[in-house]
Amino acid sequence: MEKNYSISEVADLLSVSKETLRRWDRSGKLSAVREPMSNYRVYQKDQLKIFSALDFLFNPVENENFISPNRDFNSIELFAGAGGLAIGLEQAGVNCLALNEVDHFACETLRINRPEWNVIEDDVKNVSFSNYKGIVDIVTGGFPCQAFSYAGKKLGLNDARGTLFYEFARVVNETKPAICIGENVRGLLNHEDGRTIEGMVSILDEIGYNVITPRIFKTIFYKVPQKRERLLIVGIRKDLDVNLFEFPKPYKRIYTLTDALKKGELFPVDVPVSPGSKYPKNKKEVLDLVPEGGYWRDLPLSLQKEYMGGSFFLGGGKTGMARRMSWSEPSLTLTCSPAQKQTERCHPDETRPFTVREYARIQTFPDDWAFAGSISRQYKQIGNAVPVNFAKEVGFAIVNFLNKIYPK
Image (cartoon, rainbow, N blue to C red):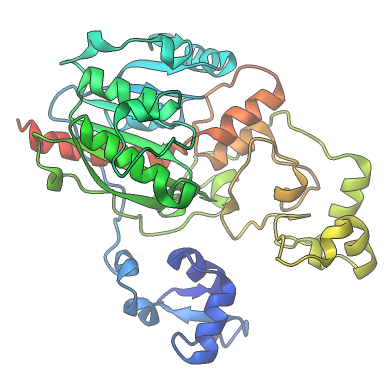
C-alpha cells in the first residue's frame, strides 16, 4: 500500500510551515485528502511529484550512500566537540590525523573513547598544522558564526582576522587539502544579510578553493530521528574538478522517536538507562497536563495564561514551550540544555527531560560512546554535536569524491 504523508511530514519535506500548506490547500495548489479510517488530512505520494526537491521519494537510497575508500584518506577536524562528525567520518572509512578542541571536557570525551586519536586541546589560534601539508586530504570544522568587518566587495583572509572562520581558513591554507567542509547552523545563510557567508566564500576563493553553493540539509533525511538542520560549505581545491563532488542522497524513510529509543532498525536494543535532569515540581505539574505531541495550547486557558505570562498575548506560536514530544515523529532539534522553557523537549510518556543516553540516541551516537564531565556538560556536548548518521553520509560523499580523484 502506498504511503500517505501527514501535513507535518510534508511541511518538513518541503521546508515550509503547516500554515503554508493549509494556504495551498485552500488555493488548490496542493489539496489534502482525508484518510477513510482515521479522517486525518493527508497527502498521497503521487501528489508530491510536482516538487522537484522531492524526487528522492520516488528514487530513494535503499540503504545508505556506502562506498569504500580506494586508499587511506586523512582528515583534520577543527572545533571537534564531542566527536559526532569525527565518528561519522570514521564510519565512512576516513582516518582522522588530528582533532582540535578548546573545551576540556569534550577533549576528555574524545580521549576516553578513542585513546589513539591525536586530540589537541588548545585554542585553535595557537596551533599550527603546516606539518600536515601534503598528508591531509580533508579539513572539516564547525566554526561558530561571527560577523566580519566587511571591507569592500571582496573579502580577503586578513579581513576575517579575530574570527574562528579565519582560523578554519588559515588551517585550510596551511595544509591545502583536496576538500574542506565547514559546518554551521542554517542562520549563517542570512547572517548580516548574507554578507558573512559571502565573505567566507570570497576568502576560500582567495586561498585557492572553488565553493559549491552552500546548502541546508535536513538531517531527518539522513537516518537521524531529529528535525535538525545543518548548513554545509564545501570547498574544492582549484586544481581539481568541482563537479566531481556530489552531496549525499536522502534515505528512503524518516525515523521517529520510537526508532531512536526503542529496539529496531536504528539500534539493536532499547536505549540504556542513564542519569538525566529533572523538572522542578511546579513545571512537572504543568507538563503532566500536556498530551503526547502537545504543547502549551493544550493546557486549560487559565493555566496557559499563568504559565506563559506576558508571552500569552504576543504573536507567534511559541510551539517549543511546554512541549511534549511524540513517539510517532522525529524529535525537535535538541539544545544544549534539556529543560529550557522556550525549547521544551519533554519525554512522550514520562514527565521529564530526555536522559543523557536518550539525548545521545537522538543524535545517533553509539551507545558505547561515553561523555566526560557533569550531566550538564554532557548535555551541552551532545546538543552541540553533528548527528553521527548525517556525518557518516557526508563522509561517504567525501570518499566518493576522493575516489574519483585518486582511482585505484
